[in-house]
Image (tube, rainbow, N blue to C red; front, side, top):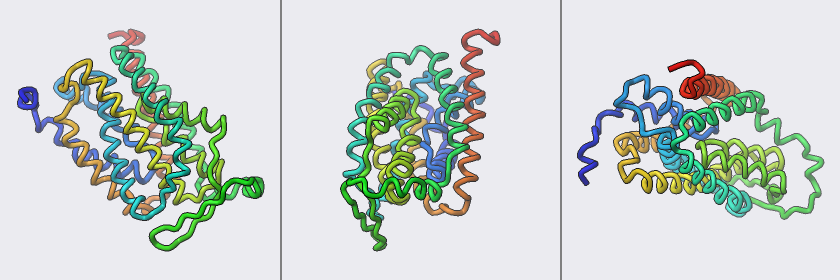
Length: 307
């Protein structure tokens, strides 16, 4: 195709090691890689020069989510081999997350020319998530809370035998109206802004339903990968419909996708090298900085700080 020949295929070479680092960090901290890629595309690229700027905020979010699909797929394969994913427990969450994420992705396509609005919404989301992540309790503490209340609920008993022979027993997770609302909000934000669903699924499985952390993490990854795949497909289709095939920065994703696939394998191998609490505090601080920077950019585009 002619448009492929017109692209500078060396422009984004530096994103290969950066993507490896982002995916490794995402696997160590449990956040979605899109939460870090979108700010790189929207804040760092304009600093590098006009040649690096993407088509717009919607293109940046869509590219970030598209890249995250491959990063989470790499982690999904690892969990699948360990036989830790309980697919039946994931189904009720997917019934909510997938259609709502698609709605969010369609809204992104509608708002793709509202640059300041999208950046302002992203900034607000980062500033909301920062204190939530900072105050997050370690999984070991969460699992023990409310255990007596959970016993005898009459839910279906579940037993998962991992590849290493470890057996995990728990009751089948129940989402409920409140959980469905939480899943819906996180999924909608994922479709619209590329981040949200991963931050709401894991707490529901571990804190509310007392699913053992290894099974909860694996099942959560499966839920997230299916959700972001649906949102990403919708976003990419909308971008191509509006701007043609060249609306996707192929000379960028040719570096980010291999990078996150490799990083998705490095992260689990480094698990434990850095404490989970340290990672959470670091990510929370980073989200706060991103929120402030993105908010400043949005206000500047609105003319609050002048041109």
